[in-house]
Structures are given as C-alpha cells and as structure tokens.
Length: 363
Image (tube, rainbow, N blue to C red; front, side, top):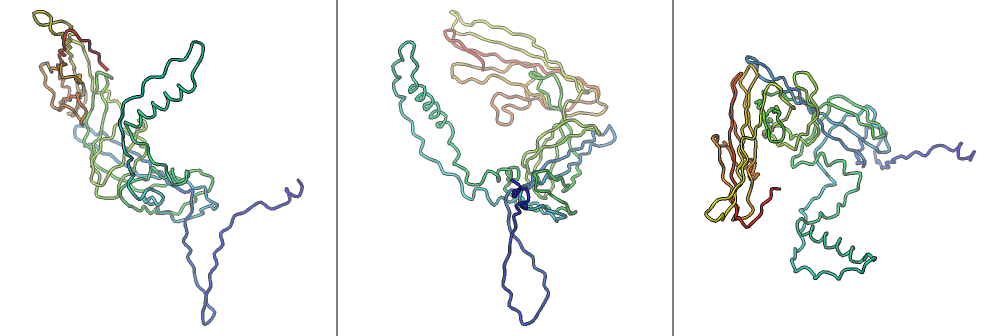
C-alpha cells in the first residue's frame, strides 16, 4: 500500500517518431495533425425578439452558439477552435430493407388449466407482438460507431460547414462544456398569432423569419427572449440556407379568444330511421388589443371518416380559408388580419351521418 502511494500517477502520452535526412544542421517547426475520440460540440441559440409598436417594426436577433465537450487524454489549453458539421463516423450508405411477408395468424393455443400460468404462451404472445410491430416499421440496423460518438447527432446535416471561433479558448477533458459564440443574425420577422381554442383559449405569438444564404442551422435548443424578458425555451429544427421558419415566443395576452359550444344535437332521419346524425356547432370570438394590426391563424378540426357509410358535412356561416392544413386530414384553419381593437367571430360546425344499425365513436 505504501509503495502504491509513492508510485507516480499513470500518464498517457502520444509519441511521434520521424526520420530526418539533411545535409547540415537546421531548425524547423513541425505541425502534427491527428484525430482523437470523445470530442463533440452541441449547437444552441438565443432568440431575442423586439415586438415593436405601431411605428417601429419588429426585430429579431438570432445568436448561434456552441457547447464544446471533450474527454480525451489531453487538456486543450488556449487552442484555436474550428467547428465542423461533418460526421466521419456516420453511415456512408443507405440502409437496406428485408422482405416483408404476410401470412395467416396461427390458431390460438389451448388455454392453460386453472391455477397454472403458461410461460411458453406468454413468450409466444410477446413474439407475435414484436412481429406485428415489425409489420409496421422496419427495425433500424445496428449502429457500428462507438457509443461515445452518439453525442454528435446534434450536428447531423446534409451540408458541410466550418465555424472558426475567433478567440482562443481552453477546453478541459472533464466533460464540462465550454461555451462559445459563433455568429449573430439580425432580421425583421413577420409576427402572427396562432390559436387552437378547442384545446387552449390562449393566443400564441410566432415570429416568421427567412434565413440568409449562409451556413445551415443545426437542430438545437433556443433560449427565447421577448422584449428583453426571458420567455422560456424552444427547439430549432435543422434549417437549410434560405429556408423560412416560425419561432414560437409563448402566449400573447393582448389577443383574447373565446370558444363557445352553440349547439350539440343527436337524432335520427329517414321515414323508418334509416340513419342517425350528430350535429355540433361552435363559435370562436377573437379580439386584438394591440395598438397595431395582428395577423392570426385559428385552427380547429373536423371528424375524419374511416368508413364510406359515415358521412361528414361541414356547416356554419364562416367557411375555413384552408383545409387539411400541413397535410393533416380534418384540420381546418381561418387566417386573416385583425386591426387594432378589432373583434372577429368565426362560426362553424359539422354534421355526421351514419346507418342507424351502427354505432360510431370518436378517437
């Protein structure tokens, strides 16, 4: 034990050997380039929105930052850092598919006797459940890269970019993050509110921006600030140069919304009650209390029939401006612009008709 306490601590070193043939003595500077594992960086952002006023346009500043971590055998002291979006350990070829077969389900196994539990039957049921899941989605092939390389997922992108940090930094090898600032982007966003009053009678503020033709924006967390006040956290997806994106900045208390159920009625139609009906009508009232106009989008939904004999008819005095929004069946939207202190009412509903000898349910 005393010998162990006196022994020096283990130190890992990298040795480089090279042969030099020269006609005379000389002095030279050698640059050694090599790769190490267990080093990664994670993008994150600050989004600072100034909503402006009637005469001052809105402004948004999007700051790109990075958290650098490394657990190598070295401490990076006062280094010049360049961040890259490349993924040397990522997949280089497309995944393969195996044949998807369909067959009749095997006959059920005889029930176990009372007081006994069949372990074999339980295992077979679990195996059938996994087979049913496989019919819906192919399992991903096993990853070949080391587990430590999975941290680089946040840097996955179809583009290659290099970010050279202007100042030298120190990154310890204790997995503690060193934070650096990369770039600033100042834009004039288009502000709008989005409302889903069926779920939440609150308006939410969004800022729509268009990215410049520069490096891509990688997915990461966004710290949100609205009018110099911290508003929470959000997520930024992977965005290509020139792409547009809407960033949510939380509730807008100066846009009020009210959601009312006007009528709910179930009944039967036909001489001998050949069909049944379910009729529902709603009223949505939105008011803008800002001193400037506000663009808005109201979202709601209609039932989507999965059977030909179930009919869904749209009703109401205010037809939607869009249906099947973003490819989602049954999602309807009303869009427009509210002037200062303006109130607008949306009235809509639907009627569902189905055979009288059937029962329907909503899910």
